Amino acid sequence: MPRPRPHALTDTDTDTDPRPHTHTDTDPRPRTAGAASGPRALAAALPGPRALAAATFGPRSLAAVLYAVLAFPLAVAGCWLVLAGLVFGALLSVTPLGPWLLAATVRAALALGALHRALAHRLLGLAVEPPRPPAAAPGALAWRRGVLGGRAGWKAVGYLLLTPFTAVLGYAAVLLGYVYGVLFTLHPVLRYVNYHTVHHPDGSVTHVSLRVLGVQLDSWPRWTLPLAAGLLLLALAPRLLRRALTPHRALLTTLLGPGAADRRIRTLEETRAQAVDDAAATLRRIERDLHDGTQARLVSLGMHLTVIRELVTAGAPPDRVLAAVDTARSGATQAVADLRRLVKGIHPPVLDEGLGAALATLAADSALPVVPATDLPVRPSPALESIAYFCAAELLANAVKHSGADEVRISAASGGGRLLLRVTDDGRGGAAVGAGSGLTGLLARVRTVDGTLTCDSPPGGPTVVTVDLPLARP
Image (tube, rainbow, N blue to C red; front, side, top):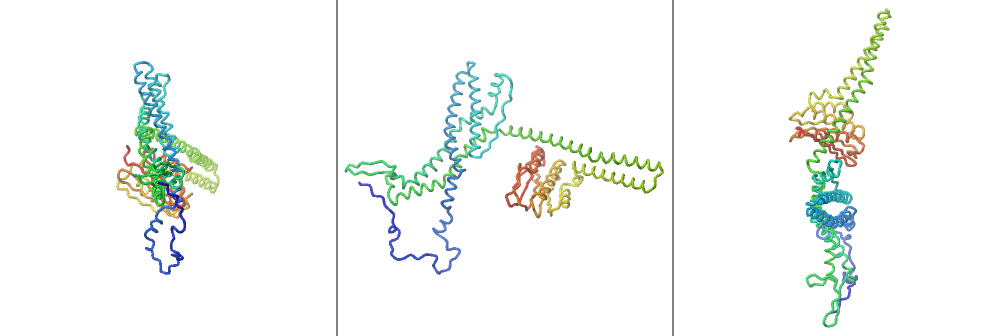
């Protein structure tokens, strides 16, 4: 049968009534809040074309598409390479060449794993720490022994053998959501160029572009079905791709990143180094304060006492002796104040009464209104109290200097084996750990006892900094 001619949509197809239209805005009946219902409410709830296009073809979505397209062939190539190396290495294991081939295969797996990590970090924003490298030892045999004996290398081998089965899910999601979504959406245009010709026995010719279950979808209004299906696929494509890449992300994080024991060892090494550096810095500060402050005042006090002795021996007037005594007494008072300040910097005496009393004292001495709240049924250890107090003092000082806040709230509570210190201000926000603020130093301090510090400070505020400390050391 002849191919039906393309149907041109004209005004008469949608409006056969010759009477003029009446705009709904001129309806004199009052509108109510529930008047927007039915198709109009559904259209208002759905995202607009611009929002849909931004979500589907935005930079992050396109980066995920590029990752899925590149990861699958890279996974297949790496799988075959590693599999061939393992097979030939096993077959040649009776010869001296076999172990070297196995070691080269494991080393190649580590290099390919680094490539996969870099690709995931660049395109997906997935940051996976590299595993601990094997201990370096001189000699080729020691290198081979370290490569074959390391867990990270064999985990990379396992990743490369398994990753084609997870990467194919992302590749299929791109094919279904994006490729078929674009083809179905452009079907009204592509049906004129993308078709095959069917010759019938009666000599007639039909151009078929899309046929489903024997039904040809090339004429109006049937081509609206693939158009609607294409738009639906494009709308769901980013979410479908994220779900499809979830197993691949989990496999990458598990096998290409450090294990729990490695992360624990790395954290302990870092916190130990930070604790040593903090202790050395504290000792240098105490030595500097004693040398530049208290020691100088005590030397001055000794000199004034010598002057007083000479004045008394020489029979000087009483007013001169009293003036020298007042000067010596003032120097002694300043020396005692310096010592008290130095001791307070090491361990505030108010902490002897507990963290609650220390925070209340800190709030009373602040330039901003501070509302303290404590709920500590079990008193923490002195070390944890000291860390919590200095964190609160530093956070309160930051709020006074930089936040522009009108009020600060400090709360400390214990429960579930944790001590939670939370400092909240209603300032301008914008604080971040590692942005040149004192939060980095506080994070290093709390990590020495396996604690954590989080900062939630959106632009415009409020700023909430939470310090989480374990009551019992692991």
